[in-house]
Length: 295
Image (cartoon, rainbow, N blue to C red; front, side):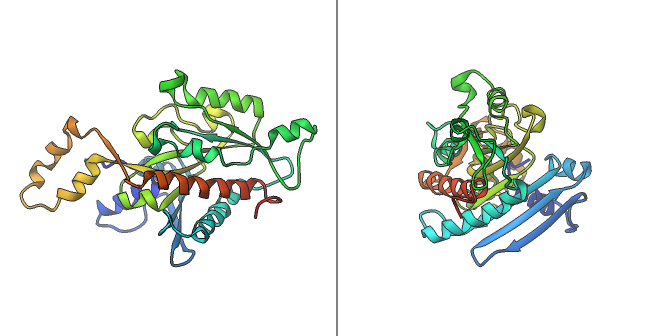
């Protein structure tokens, strides 16, 4: 049974769990950095098609930040995560005088586990109107930032990728930053993990309703995705709970294939998860694209 996850770090972990050979996945390079006793950064680079096939993800960079005791924790801890997230974003989005960025908040703000994108977008400093007002083509302290909330296809009837492509045609960004909710394999990661990638994202992946992918091919510009796992497949929780029970392993696949388990589960603290991580991500984006204003 394949266990669902949107996190590259978990795909790598599951590969190692199923292989006795613990050598690194062919075509995949990994760097792990312990920032302090609370924050760890894992950088995974899928270098070629073999690595892409094994990982089932496009070639590119996948950066995972894991931080303990964030939810409802000290503001200083959250600031530290924002700063580290910004350091990683700066590698993917170097600031320059002419930088133009389109920030997209994916998801449905009426459904809390899917509301990370819209909540984060609300806290990002939008500046494009200033550049239009003063007829400026750049600035030394801040980027030209546009924001867009495309909603979901269930309420608009239009693919998010189509709407975002139109927004990009108007704002002409150098890069699109897309924020979305993800699905995790390990429930502990719902309150501790952020993933960044430079390969784009499939809107709705966190809720199992994947739409047209957002990437350079579909939007015309580079897409940097920032995601936080907010849900976990019910099958995964049940699998982890019963796989060691004596005599049940022979029936496990039959149990897991039941249509009754077509559910996703979220944390009882999901409101706080969305608030805290939207604060962290928006702060990191503001620091990255407006270095003369935020630090």
